[in-house]
Length: 185
Image 1 (tube, helix red, strand yellow):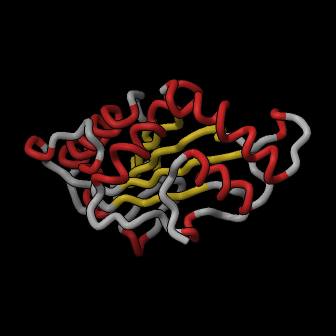
Image 2 (cartoon, helix red, strand yellow):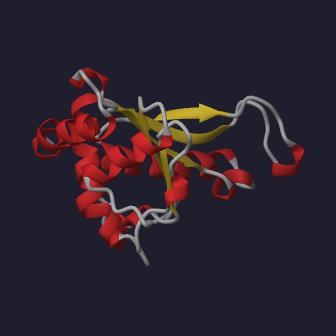
């Protein structure tokens, strides 16, 4: 955890101040939170309530292993017949990381998870939005080192959102590059 946070303080802040002309180190964009989200989707759509709860518990346990924090279960807000969805059914699990756990997760994400993911050639530039936030989708959660592939019963996808307080896409892009995220040009 301390390695990436120290890199932010020692390398990223001076480089960003020089490039964008910030007068105060507090004006430099920083990462505010990381949100990890996994939808249960088709895995629980046509199941009975007992089977649905079993799958939800397995996914929630894996998310807790990956993030080090218990996930919050999210229920559907309204019924949608085309998706076989009823109002009030739990459809996703999400975790929001801040401060120490956020830096710890980000370090493991950059140095361990991304290189282990299948056919990884770098993150797309289009994954950064106009406010400098990054959204990354994974088809399989088994690229995280906390998950043992041999013991897995369900393989699910998840989305990682890295939120910053940058005002422009260029600021967010430079922040991610200086932190060491492999972004394709």
